[in-house]
Length: 312
Image (tube, rainbow, N blue to C red):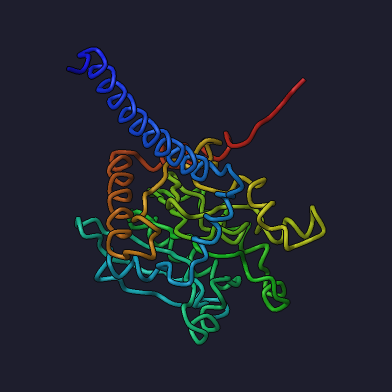
Protein backbone atom coordinates (compact mmCIF):
# COMPACT_ATOMS: atom_id res chain seq x y z
CA UNK A 1 0.00 0.00 0.00
CA UNK A 2 1.21 3.51 -0.86
CA UNK A 3 1.91 5.96 1.90
CA UNK A 4 -1.15 8.28 2.42
CA UNK A 5 1.19 11.13 3.18
CA UNK A 6 2.86 10.75 -0.23
CA UNK A 7 -0.53 10.82 -1.98
CA UNK A 8 -1.43 13.96 -0.05
CA UNK A 9 1.87 15.56 -1.00
CA UNK A 10 1.28 14.76 -4.68
CA UNK A 11 -2.22 16.25 -4.46
CA UNK A 12 -0.88 19.42 -2.87
CA UNK A 13 1.76 19.70 -5.57
CA UNK A 14 -0.94 19.50 -8.27
CA UNK A 15 -2.96 22.20 -6.49
CA UNK A 16 0.13 24.40 -6.21
CA UNK A 17 0.84 23.93 -9.92
CA UNK A 18 -2.75 24.93 -10.79
CA UNK A 19 -2.53 27.98 -8.55
CA UNK A 20 0.74 28.93 -10.20
CA UNK A 21 -0.84 28.66 -13.64
CA UNK A 22 -3.75 30.84 -12.52
CA UNK A 23 -1.34 33.32 -10.96
CA UNK A 24 0.70 33.47 -14.15
CA UNK A 25 -2.46 34.14 -16.15
CA UNK A 26 -3.55 36.85 -13.73
CA UNK A 27 -0.11 38.45 -13.89
CA UNK A 28 -0.22 38.46 -17.67
CA UNK A 29 -3.66 40.06 -17.64
CA UNK A 30 -2.48 42.64 -15.10
CA UNK A 31 0.52 43.51 -17.28
CA UNK A 32 -1.79 43.88 -20.27
CA UNK A 33 -4.09 46.22 -18.35
CA UNK A 34 -1.14 48.29 -17.11
CA UNK A 35 0.09 48.62 -20.68
CA UNK A 36 -3.34 49.82 -21.81
CA UNK A 37 -3.41 52.33 -18.95
CA UNK A 38 -0.03 53.71 -19.97
CA UNK A 39 -1.29 54.17 -23.52
CA UNK A 40 -4.35 56.04 -22.28
CA UNK A 41 -2.14 58.29 -20.17
CA UNK A 42 0.10 59.01 -23.15
CA UNK A 43 3.00 57.05 -21.74
CA UNK A 44 4.81 54.06 -23.23
CA UNK A 45 5.73 55.99 -26.38
CA UNK A 46 2.12 56.77 -27.29
CA UNK A 47 1.33 60.48 -27.70
CA UNK A 48 -2.28 60.88 -26.60
CA UNK A 49 -2.39 64.55 -27.60
CA UNK A 50 -1.38 63.69 -31.17
CA UNK A 51 -4.01 60.95 -31.29
CA UNK A 52 -6.63 63.54 -30.31
CA UNK A 53 -5.41 65.84 -33.06
CA UNK A 54 -5.82 63.06 -35.62
CA UNK A 55 -9.33 62.27 -34.37
CA UNK A 56 -10.31 65.95 -34.38
CA UNK A 57 -9.25 66.07 -38.05
CA UNK A 58 -10.75 62.71 -39.01
CA UNK A 59 -12.24 63.03 -42.53
CA UNK A 60 -15.48 61.35 -41.43
CA UNK A 61 -15.88 63.27 -38.18
CA UNK A 62 -19.30 64.96 -37.94
CA UNK A 63 -19.28 68.63 -38.83
CA UNK A 64 -21.50 71.43 -37.55
CA UNK A 65 -24.35 70.84 -39.99
CA UNK A 66 -24.40 67.14 -39.09
CA UNK A 67 -25.14 68.13 -35.49
CA UNK A 68 -27.53 70.94 -36.43
CA UNK A 69 -29.79 68.72 -38.54
CA UNK A 70 -30.08 66.30 -35.61
CA UNK A 71 -30.49 68.88 -32.84
CA UNK A 72 -32.46 71.64 -34.57
CA UNK A 73 -34.71 70.11 -37.26
CA UNK A 74 -36.37 73.46 -38.08
CA UNK A 75 -33.07 75.31 -38.49
CA UNK A 76 -33.46 78.41 -40.69
CA UNK A 77 -30.19 79.80 -42.00
CA UNK A 78 -29.45 83.47 -42.54
CA UNK A 79 -26.84 84.80 -44.94
CA UNK A 80 -24.55 87.76 -45.45
CA UNK A 81 -22.94 90.36 -43.24
CA UNK A 82 -24.87 93.36 -44.69
CA UNK A 83 -21.53 94.89 -45.61
CA UNK A 84 -19.62 92.74 -48.10
CA UNK A 85 -21.07 89.31 -48.78
CA UNK A 86 -21.64 85.73 -47.71
CA UNK A 87 -19.08 83.39 -46.14
CA UNK A 88 -20.05 79.70 -46.31
CA UNK A 89 -17.35 78.82 -43.74
CA UNK A 90 -19.73 80.12 -41.06
CA UNK A 91 -23.32 78.95 -40.72
CA UNK A 92 -25.78 81.03 -38.70
CA UNK A 93 -29.50 80.74 -38.09
CA UNK A 94 -32.41 80.21 -35.73
CA UNK A 95 -34.26 77.07 -34.72
CA UNK A 96 -35.73 75.05 -31.89
CA UNK A 97 -33.95 72.38 -29.86
CA UNK A 98 -35.84 69.11 -29.45
CA UNK A 99 -36.82 70.17 -25.92
CA UNK A 100 -38.66 73.23 -27.23
CA UNK A 101 -35.97 75.83 -26.47
CA UNK A 102 -35.62 78.41 -29.25
CA UNK A 103 -31.96 79.16 -29.94
CA UNK A 104 -29.65 80.87 -32.35
CA UNK A 105 -26.75 78.83 -33.70
CA UNK A 106 -23.48 80.07 -35.17
CA UNK A 107 -21.06 77.43 -36.36
CA UNK A 108 -17.93 76.91 -38.37
CA UNK A 109 -18.51 74.42 -41.16
CA UNK A 110 -15.88 72.32 -42.92
CA UNK A 111 -16.43 70.43 -46.16
CA UNK A 112 -16.19 66.69 -46.62
CA UNK A 113 -15.41 66.21 -50.33
CA UNK A 114 -13.22 68.40 -52.51
CA UNK A 115 -16.10 70.49 -53.84
CA UNK A 116 -17.45 71.17 -50.35
CA UNK A 117 -14.01 71.88 -48.91
CA UNK A 118 -13.45 74.57 -51.53
CA UNK A 119 -16.96 75.97 -51.04
CA UNK A 120 -16.50 76.15 -47.26
CA UNK A 121 -12.89 77.35 -47.63
CA UNK A 122 -11.74 74.38 -45.50
CA UNK A 123 -13.66 75.82 -42.54
CA UNK A 124 -11.50 78.96 -42.41
CA UNK A 125 -13.75 82.03 -42.07
CA UNK A 126 -13.13 85.42 -43.64
CA UNK A 127 -14.10 88.78 -42.10
CA UNK A 128 -17.58 88.70 -43.62
CA UNK A 129 -18.17 85.37 -41.88
CA UNK A 130 -17.34 86.77 -38.46
CA UNK A 131 -19.45 89.86 -39.15
CA UNK A 132 -22.37 87.69 -40.22
CA UNK A 133 -22.05 85.69 -37.01
CA UNK A 134 -21.98 88.87 -34.91
CA UNK A 135 -25.00 90.25 -36.72
CA UNK A 136 -26.92 87.07 -35.93
CA UNK A 137 -25.80 87.04 -32.30
CA UNK A 138 -26.85 90.65 -31.78
CA UNK A 139 -30.33 89.84 -33.12
CA UNK A 140 -30.50 86.84 -30.77
CA UNK A 141 -29.48 89.02 -27.85
CA UNK A 142 -32.12 91.61 -28.74
CA UNK A 143 -34.88 88.99 -28.62
CA UNK A 144 -33.50 87.05 -25.67
CA UNK A 145 -32.68 83.81 -27.47
CA UNK A 146 -29.76 81.74 -26.15
CA UNK A 147 -26.77 81.38 -28.47
CA UNK A 148 -25.01 78.11 -29.25
CA UNK A 149 -21.64 78.37 -31.00
CA UNK A 150 -20.02 75.27 -32.54
CA UNK A 151 -16.30 75.71 -33.14
CA UNK A 152 -14.46 73.69 -35.77
CA UNK A 153 -11.75 75.48 -37.73
CA UNK A 154 -7.99 75.21 -38.25
CA UNK A 155 -7.96 79.01 -37.95
CA UNK A 156 -9.17 82.21 -39.58
CA UNK A 157 -8.35 82.50 -43.29
CA UNK A 158 -4.90 84.18 -43.65
CA UNK A 159 -5.25 85.25 -47.29
CA UNK A 160 -4.49 88.73 -48.59
CA UNK A 161 -8.14 89.40 -49.47
CA UNK A 162 -9.20 88.62 -45.89
CA UNK A 163 -6.51 90.90 -44.49
CA UNK A 164 -7.56 93.68 -46.84
CA UNK A 165 -11.13 93.45 -45.56
CA UNK A 166 -10.08 93.64 -41.91
CA UNK A 167 -9.67 90.09 -40.62
CA UNK A 168 -7.99 91.13 -37.37
CA UNK A 169 -10.54 93.87 -36.71
CA UNK A 170 -13.45 91.50 -37.31
CA UNK A 171 -12.07 88.98 -34.80
CA UNK A 172 -11.30 91.66 -32.21
CA UNK A 173 -14.76 93.18 -32.63
CA UNK A 174 -16.40 89.80 -32.04
CA UNK A 175 -14.36 89.22 -28.88
CA UNK A 176 -15.49 92.53 -27.44
CA UNK A 177 -19.12 92.32 -28.49
CA UNK A 178 -19.63 88.71 -27.45
CA UNK A 179 -18.58 89.66 -23.94
CA UNK A 180 -21.49 92.15 -23.89
CA UNK A 181 -24.32 89.92 -25.16
CA UNK A 182 -27.37 89.98 -22.89
CA UNK A 183 -28.31 86.35 -23.44
CA UNK A 184 -26.79 82.97 -22.47
CA UNK A 185 -23.92 81.87 -24.71
CA UNK A 186 -22.78 78.23 -24.86
CA UNK A 187 -19.75 77.39 -26.98
CA UNK A 188 -18.63 73.88 -27.89
CA UNK A 189 -15.43 72.84 -29.66
CA UNK A 190 -16.62 69.95 -31.82
CA UNK A 191 -13.38 69.35 -33.74
CA UNK A 192 -10.46 71.71 -34.23
CA UNK A 193 -10.45 74.91 -32.21
CA UNK A 194 -7.76 76.84 -34.02
CA UNK A 195 -6.39 80.09 -32.60
CA UNK A 196 -8.28 83.40 -32.84
CA UNK A 197 -10.31 81.95 -35.68
CA UNK A 198 -12.12 79.78 -33.15
CA UNK A 199 -11.97 82.17 -30.20
CA UNK A 200 -13.84 84.80 -32.24
CA UNK A 201 -16.95 82.67 -31.63
CA UNK A 202 -15.78 81.27 -28.31
CA UNK A 203 -16.55 83.91 -25.67
CA UNK A 204 -19.29 82.05 -23.82
CA UNK A 205 -20.79 81.66 -20.37
CA UNK A 206 -20.15 77.94 -20.74
CA UNK A 207 -17.32 76.52 -22.82
CA UNK A 208 -17.26 72.80 -23.57
CA UNK A 209 -15.18 70.45 -25.69
CA UNK A 210 -16.01 67.11 -27.20
CA UNK A 211 -13.82 64.36 -25.83
CA UNK A 212 -11.57 64.15 -28.90
CA UNK A 213 -11.58 67.84 -29.84
CA UNK A 214 -8.53 70.09 -29.56
CA UNK A 215 -8.31 73.81 -28.75
CA UNK A 216 -5.09 75.73 -29.22
CA UNK A 217 -3.56 79.11 -29.99
CA UNK A 218 -1.64 77.50 -32.86
CA UNK A 219 -1.63 74.23 -34.78
CA UNK A 220 1.00 71.67 -33.65
CA UNK A 221 2.69 71.78 -37.06
CA UNK A 222 2.98 75.59 -37.04
CA UNK A 223 4.24 75.54 -33.46
CA UNK A 224 6.87 72.96 -34.39
CA UNK A 225 7.97 75.07 -37.36
CA UNK A 226 8.54 78.04 -35.03
CA UNK A 227 9.98 76.31 -31.95
CA UNK A 228 11.85 73.36 -33.49
CA UNK A 229 12.35 74.79 -36.99
CA UNK A 230 10.77 71.60 -38.27
CA UNK A 231 7.02 71.29 -38.99
CA UNK A 232 7.32 67.49 -39.05
CA UNK A 233 7.71 67.57 -35.26
CA UNK A 234 4.04 68.42 -34.81
CA UNK A 235 3.55 65.32 -32.67
CA UNK A 236 6.09 66.62 -30.15
CA UNK A 237 4.54 70.09 -30.16
CA UNK A 238 1.03 68.69 -29.65
CA UNK A 239 2.04 67.23 -26.30
CA UNK A 240 3.75 70.42 -25.15
CA UNK A 241 0.85 72.70 -26.15
CA UNK A 242 -1.67 71.05 -23.78
CA UNK A 243 -4.47 71.19 -26.33
CA UNK A 244 -6.69 68.26 -25.36
CA UNK A 245 -9.98 68.52 -23.51
CA UNK A 246 -8.44 66.90 -20.43
CA UNK A 247 -5.53 69.35 -20.43
CA UNK A 248 -7.78 72.40 -20.73
CA UNK A 249 -10.16 71.10 -18.09
CA UNK A 250 -7.27 70.74 -15.63
CA UNK A 251 -6.13 74.27 -16.47
CA UNK A 252 -9.61 75.65 -15.82
CA UNK A 253 -10.07 76.96 -19.35
CA UNK A 254 -13.21 74.98 -20.16
CA UNK A 255 -16.27 74.04 -18.12
CA UNK A 256 -16.76 70.45 -19.17
CA UNK A 257 -15.95 67.57 -21.50
CA UNK A 258 -18.71 66.04 -23.62
CA UNK A 259 -18.21 62.29 -24.18
CA UNK A 260 -18.10 60.69 -27.61
CA UNK A 261 -19.11 57.22 -28.82
CA UNK A 262 -16.43 54.53 -28.52
CA UNK A 263 -13.80 55.12 -31.17
CA UNK A 264 -14.79 58.75 -31.74
CA UNK A 265 -17.77 60.79 -32.92
CA UNK A 266 -17.27 59.57 -36.48
CA UNK A 267 -18.41 56.09 -35.42
CA UNK A 268 -21.96 57.13 -34.50
CA UNK A 269 -23.31 60.57 -35.49
CA UNK A 270 -26.64 60.07 -33.71
CA UNK A 271 -25.04 59.08 -30.41
CA UNK A 272 -22.57 61.96 -30.61
CA UNK A 273 -25.46 64.39 -31.21
CA UNK A 274 -27.31 62.88 -28.25
CA UNK A 275 -24.36 63.53 -25.93
CA UNK A 276 -24.09 67.10 -27.25
CA UNK A 277 -27.82 67.70 -26.79
CA UNK A 278 -27.69 66.56 -23.16
CA UNK A 279 -24.85 68.96 -22.38
CA UNK A 280 -26.52 71.90 -24.14
CA UNK A 281 -29.84 71.43 -22.37
CA UNK A 282 -28.14 71.16 -18.98
CA UNK A 283 -26.12 74.34 -19.61
CA UNK A 284 -29.15 76.34 -20.77
CA UNK A 285 -31.17 75.15 -17.77
CA UNK A 286 -28.41 76.36 -15.43
CA UNK A 287 -28.56 79.86 -16.90
CA UNK A 288 -32.31 80.11 -17.37
CA UNK A 289 -32.86 82.25 -14.26
CA UNK A 290 -29.85 84.54 -14.77
CA UNK A 291 -30.53 88.16 -15.65
CA UNK A 292 -28.72 89.90 -18.54
CA UNK A 293 -26.41 91.81 -16.19
CA UNK A 294 -25.51 88.58 -14.39
CA UNK A 295 -24.75 86.80 -17.67
CA UNK A 296 -22.44 89.60 -18.78
CA UNK A 297 -20.66 89.76 -15.42
CA UNK A 298 -20.21 85.98 -15.26
CA UNK A 299 -18.84 85.83 -18.80
CA UNK A 300 -16.46 88.73 -18.18
CA UNK A 301 -15.17 87.33 -14.89
CA UNK A 302 -14.73 83.87 -16.41
CA UNK A 303 -12.26 85.07 -19.03
CA UNK A 304 -10.52 87.57 -16.74
CA UNK A 305 -9.61 84.74 -14.37
CA UNK A 306 -7.91 82.63 -17.03
CA UNK A 307 -4.14 82.23 -16.89
CA UNK A 308 -1.44 82.26 -14.21
CA UNK A 309 -0.15 85.56 -12.92
CA UNK A 310 2.82 86.26 -10.68
CA UNK A 311 3.40 89.53 -8.86
CA UNK A 312 6.25 90.59 -6.63
